[in-house]
Length: 314
Image (cartoon, rainbow, N blue to C red):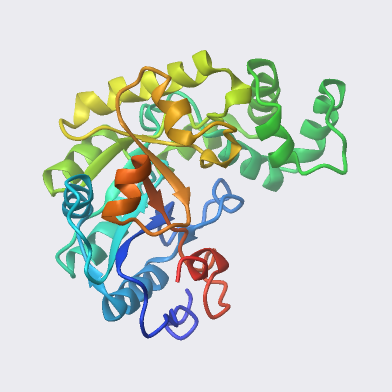
């Protein structure tokens, strides 16, 4: 467990007015081997300290209220902090939601439908699991015929060269190297449909993060990206009757055209949600119709004074 001292956030005395949406993955005491390579997973004590310090630096606001204000052009007169969680991890309801409830706020959760439905494991989690099962060397060898070079970052290469054939190599290696009972049990890191309904009933926003978090870039083909968003949207719609959001996997920096132009061209209704490390204001949203998030300080309690991602927006 990380100490409160190591979790302190040293914020500037006068942050610029606007909506800062802090973007996390999970909040959990359990450090699964499947998430250690992903980042932005925090223990509850670290997350609680983040929330406490942000409450002193500005106004905490529920995500639904913040989105309503942004969509109608309501200005944010003070630094306003809201909380968004990606991928649909189970710790959000168990640990993050009760912490936020102490401050009378709720957040938003982006879900990947196949993870919640226990149909497919997140491929980043498979890579993380293979690392601890001594399987990455096997995966690298099997990817050599597809053009992978050993000196290259495996995660970066897979993102750039993502395809059904490449993904099948990852899946087969994961299934071979990780025991069946571990693979079946591993899905409990993600929330269930019943858990998501409970969050919705308590005022949380659900968002579409695609079916299985494949890269949603132009190089991946617009049809495949559209299919991923459409499949995810169908699942979210079965649980949640509210505003629809297209939460871009890995951010829109990999799209050569404007993010709104590319993602709206998919034919899937929704407002584009990016990372971007930018402040949201009525003017920025009016200009490009994109909602931006800010990565939180530190990955899993590492403690420089302030993470560069959050530093960039002050």
